[in-house]
Image (cartoon, rainbow, N blue to C red):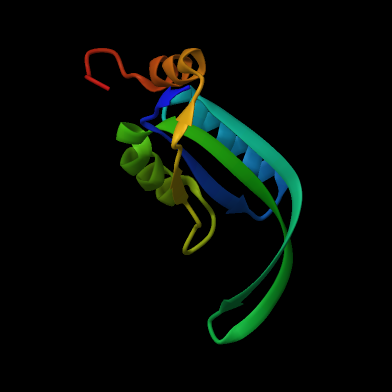
Length: 113
């Protein structure tokens, strides 16, 4: 295990199709190395003064810490929600080979990390 500069970003979406479209786009754009799609989560939340109880899909995006701001901004551009969730959780540590793969998968040519 080694110290990490990786992060998870959690994103809810209205359904699996939207979540998959977001995941493909974000991986293609090298904003995240991997997206895990959890097809069904029940979300209970307050929105515009009312309690909502909805089924959603959840994305767990794995990215390098230097890419988090760009990832969150792009989620804001692509997401159908007025206020999309894009919460960062820093990764404390992980296997060096995995963290290296994650870093390489999110590196943009000609740009340091």
